Length: 251
Ligand SMILES: NC(=O)c1ccc[n+]([C@@H]2O[C@H](COP(=O)([O-])OP(=O)(O)OC[C@H]3O[C@@H](n4cnc5c(N)ncnc54)[C@H](O)[C@@H]3O)[C@@H](O)[C@H]2O)c1
Image 1 (cartoon, rainbow, N blue to C red):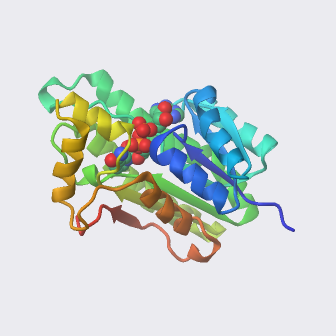
Image 2 (cartoon, protein in one colour):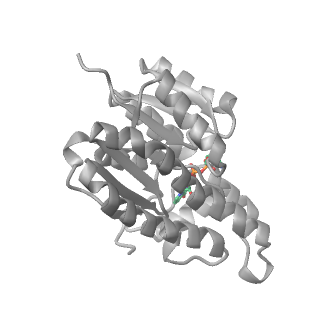
């Protein structure tokens, strides 16, 4: 039997990242669960172990060069060379442009955009060496523009250009790079948005669902399903694509 491939999922302590980590473990990969705090990442690792999978919790700040390099090295040492990378870690610091602090511009750009760059930079050598790799970046429907999210929209649109360029540069090494741009997904991130604007979460979700052609908001497992496809062996000719995963034709 061949050794299972190693997958890294960032921001996998909860929400969409946790669902992706669980799905990839169920698909048979060894999964490195990366998040800011190793102890919170360990809760996802425990769920994977309960389901019969194999995972490792690693603390990392993806926006820090030394931290991201050390995390990827630890994964390579303890699980094996990572050939799958899902850049999912993210934060929001929403505000209207005129009162958006410069620091909140920087922190959002740093986690999403600089973080994805640093993680790809650290992981790509393991992929090119094996002539196989799968990179998935988490963009957002907000890349098309969203009131109160100038920083987040810029980061998520930037990730799309980054995705297409990495796809061009690494394609010849058997490494594909794609992005998912989810619409409304039910997680703590969207719950926090509802709280910030003072609407009960159930009401916020119902309002969103009414605007979505399939008549419901998305679940983390919806995103995990598409990641599962992108990282599969058979998806080697799908490269540099952005899929809007929003229950409708929103792009
Ligand atoms: N929820 C949605 O509706 C939605 C829609 C589109 C895109 N997204 C994107 O999907 C991704 C996951 O979103 P979510 O809703 O699960 O969010 P979430 O807030 O529930 O989870 C994000 C995770 O990222 C981790 N994280 C934050 N900064 C980090 C850093 N510097 N280094 C490592 N880990 C870090 C957090 O600790 C957290 O566990 C994000 O990139 C988000 O922008 C979410």
